[in-house]
Image 1 (tube, helix red, strand yellow):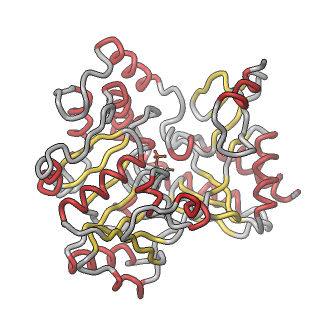
Image 2 (image 1 turned 120 degrees about the vertical axis):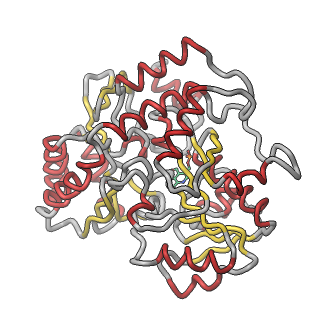
Image 3 (image 1 turned 90 degrees about the horizontal axis):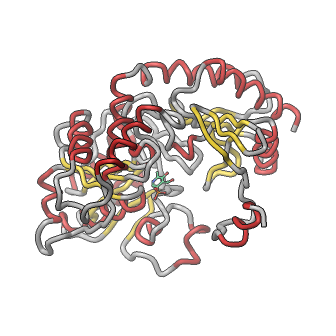
Length: 394
Ligand SMILES: Cc1ncc(COP(=O)(O)O)c(C=O)c1O
C-alpha cells in the first residue's frame, strides 16, 4: 500500500477532504512534496511557522537540547534552563502585571488552564465568550466556542457560559459580578479575521475592572509578531489579566502557556495544591525551540517590516475587482470573495499553482493570508499575482 493509502486507512480522519500533500521537506516559506512540487506557504500551519520552516537557529537549539535531556519530570518540579530562560524573556516583553508563566502543551490546554485559574481565583463560575470565537477543541474550550454547528453534537458541555456578540458595545453590560472571566481574541481568527471596533477592548477592560472579572486575551493566533506587534493587545493599549499563547510560541514545536500575575497564579498552589497538572507542559525541547524563536524575533528586523508587507498584499489584491474586501492587520489577513464555491475553487486552483492557502472555520466567504513573517516582497508579489489571476478566472 502507498503511504497515501496507509494514511487514509490507519490515520484517523477528521474530514472527507484532507489536502493529501505528501511533504518530503520544508524550507523558509516553502513546502516540497515527493513529486517535486513546491508550495508557497500562505498559512504557516495556522500561524505557527512565523519564522518560516527549518530556521537553522531553531533547529540547532533543538539538537543541542536533545543531546542534554528530554522529559525529566511532570511540570513544575525541576529547574530546567530552557524553560526558565524562555519565561524570563517572555516576561521581559510584557507589562509588569503579566509576570508569571504556566507552560502547557497546546492552545487548548492554555485555555483550559486559564478558565480553571479564573474560576479558582475569583471563586465564581460564569465564563463570558463571543460569537464566532474559536478557543480550541477540548470540552472546556469547546464550551466557549462561538459557533453552535461545531459544538452541538458534543453537548452537554460546561454549564454557566454566556455568549455575547463581538463588537456589540450594548452587550458588555451583561458581564456582571457573577462573571469569573471574559475570554476574547483581540482579533478574531476563525471568524475570518475580525478586528475589534475602536474602544471595544477598552470598554471590556473597564467593565471587567468594575465587576472584578478577569479579562483573558487569547493571543494563540495573534501573538509573536503576526499583527506587526509582538502581541496584538499592544495595538489596542489594553492589558489583559491573563494572556494565552501557543502556536508560534514553540517555534514549530508544541508549546502553549497562560500568563498572569504571580498573585493570581498563586491560587493554583493551594486549596487544592496542584491546581493544574501537566506531564509534558513546558517540554525542554519545545522550550529550547521557543527560546531560539523568540530570540530571533526580538533581535532580527522582522516586526519592523510587517506593516510594509501588509500594504503590499493590499496593493496587489486591489488589482482584482472580484475581491470584495481584504480584512485584518499585519500578516493576519483574509480575502473576501462572494461565496464558498469560489473559496473552494480558489483554494484548489491555488494549490495546483503552487500556493497553499486555507478557509476559516466560521466564515465561508474568506480565505486565509497568514504567511511566515519572513516572506519576501517578491514572494508576496508572486503569491498575489497568481491568486488574482485565479480569482479573476473563477
Ligand atoms: C485563537 C485560538 N485559540 C485556541 C486555539 C487552540 O489551539 P490548539 O489547536 O493548539 O489547541 C486556536 C487554534 O487554532 C486558536 O486559533
